[in-house]
Length: 126
Image (cartoon, rainbow, N blue to C red):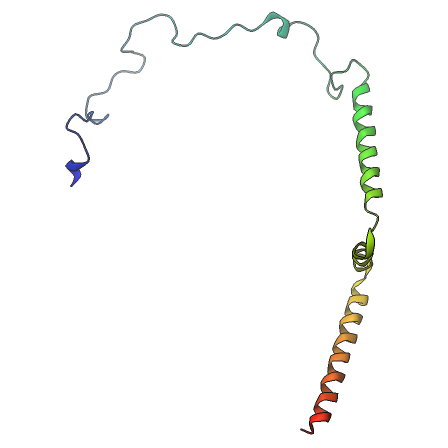
């Protein structure tokens, strides 16, 4: 079955022929295969930027703009978190609830369920 899917003109295995010496090439040429592109002169001339300057001149004026924009965005997020409607108020109430408040609510619910169950058993006379 192996010959069914292959051709007789398959290339030989890479390791079946003897190797060649490092540094020799099969095509003698002195020019490199892929010549490198020239770097534009405009990219290499001029002064570099200092760290944190943001590329907007000296003195770091660009950093202040980003900082104030971030502050405005944080304020907008803080004011947008106001509860909206009945579900928003309910969510806000649940988020402000402490662990002891939660345990107290669960305990009260269990007591109501126990009282209901006892009343049902009393009605059935078991």
